Amino acid sequence: MKYFFLSEGWSIGRVWELGGLWNELAWRRKPEIERLNLCILEQGEKLWLYRVEEAVLMVEVKPDASSSNSPIGQVVLKRLITAEQAIELLCAAEDFGDRL
Image (cartoon, rainbow, N blue to C red; front, side):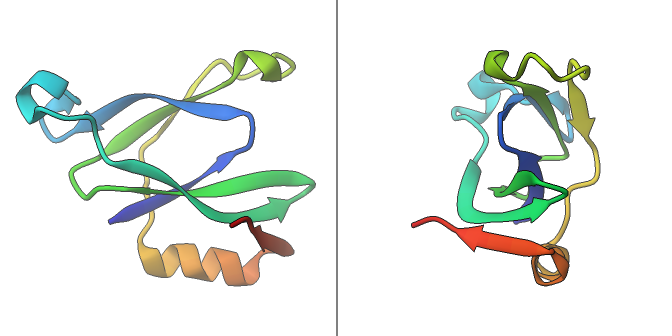
């Protein structure tokens, strides 16, 4: 599994795998992407931890319509992190929380 943090108010767009954009017809399913019940607060911003399957290479993220104050239109996350890196970031965060 791979992981990434995503700011609250942002959503996932397109997903890439080794052959290019994720093709639901070829895979016969959507990519496995799950928001976990862990987040960290960094500079007043809540960042949620997501888990994705190993086949995912890149994820496009963009602010929700309600977050229209963001000057950023979209971002492609090319460096997904390992479980160990996620744990290190959680331990080093200024504050973290979990919601069950």
